Image 1 (tube, helix red, strand yellow):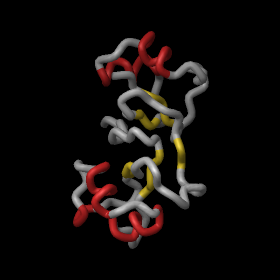
Image 2 (spheres, rainbow, N blue to C red):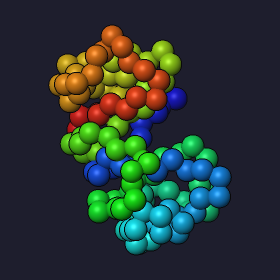
Image 3 (cartoon, one colour):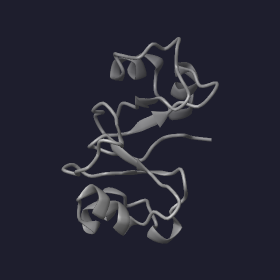
Image 4 (cartoon, one colour):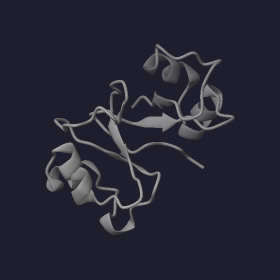
Length: 122
């Protein structure tokens, strides 16, 4: 199962919790509902799932409690799951190990942690 996060140029994700709506998230992050919807075209407002992550567009406010990821060209991230290796991710995404490592100069490929996010190059 792929754990590729949706593209997010800002690198800021909101994890859906019980009771969240796009309107509530837009209000909490001080972005317009239209901006939030445009940043998440893959999201169906009626089918938000607890634990899913959505992109907060550039300029959002009140983001101190949200996870900010390092900039990633193309804004596509992979969330590490138990047992993931760079080789396994490369194989699943049709990328090379070298390209993934080049896009993530700060990671230790021998010490990946579940929940960690890495950049997938374009």
